[in-house]
Length: 541
Image (tube, rainbow, N blue to C red; front, side):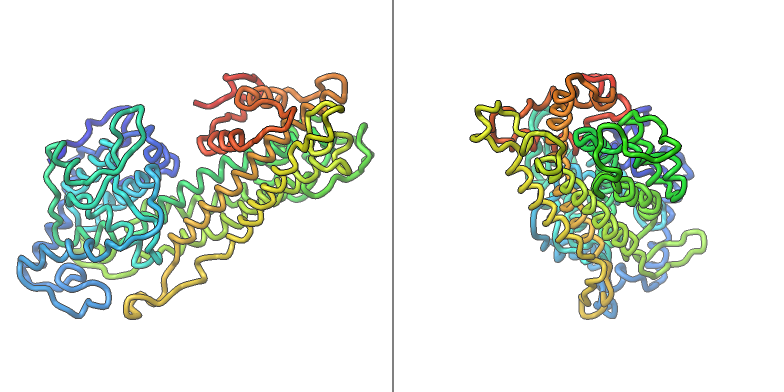
């Protein structure tokens, strides 16, 4: 029997209380261990579920998935102790048909954690021993290989979660890190368990269904998408400020009084970020064309940036509410009401709330790509960039004919944007009747979450491209002005990025730079509040 981790300041104690998205992400990204509470009340509540099931079995009660077949096979009775023990094993076995790419290690860790949180609610009829085994997997960084395709989002994520159940029972494959300086590699679960002196777990009645019949995969992926979106929204605002600076844009478009007239809180927050980054004074009493600007009103991709990014900011609250409610829910079927002594048959495995968040998130995020792509198009075009070099080339005048600067990068960003926009078709409206029309209305929540993650990857690529060009344009603007003239926050941010990427002078392939910037974005490397400091002090650990 694996021993639970001793509670400490570095471990998240699970006892059925609510867990935040940030805590989930900390576990998924390996910054936080977990342990089960030693509270006897919590443990007694967990054990009361399987005890109630055993009593019902002794009384020859009928419980879906325990004394019956699964899904449309509910009409088939399962009899005898041998069949009762074999039934959950058959459940994960016949669902072992996942396809597509494997979830990465962070996603797999998130899936296990989400399932553990749900089962700790105490209404799924599982034992403490099962919860301890899931905790052991997390804290030993031994994680199931989970193919990403095969779930329609109700009855939950059956096929991908079958890989979690099978691993607990010593089957299929796990990700294992040979050492701290090596990446995770796949190994047979049975071999790894043997090395750790761990016997395969034997699922009790209802435990196979409790593990698989839930929304853990879609919720885990959605939480990761939410985290990436939160950072990308803030980064898009910083990139916009750099673009406005490079184009000598009108900073009064972000005036506080202007945004008080249309008081969406997130939109106003973006405008505040832009004011702070650009360090501009309050708007004049009589509106006039700002000094150094030939336009009273800039083009929409900068002027309306708070309105585009603000949609993301104003949606974060309800996205969080939906996702944290799902994260902290019991979402398998049936549920065990220990206090009332009854079995509750229902459909909490339906992932409609997650699907709706992911379908809306991917649309809002794709709009960020469209915004940044348009900003990049202005930067590289000498008709619109107010005297900056064509394509922001850094070559000397003598070499200008040979050098093409960011021309191909802008084409690439346009391609990534187009693909992101193409991916915004909502998945939740494509319900399919499955499993002999038993599952005749399904959520498609997992497909929606996978779509959202693909959109995020594309948008991060567009952000990396526009960021690369924007710092080049900001420096070129400063050189044209004869002094720095760059607001301190932006100057510090540019300096910080120059530790990673060099100026573009003579043409060079920028793939390595863009991949590095994408990695920085994924790891939330830059702390915007510290950017004015410059150098390494402005980077997050």
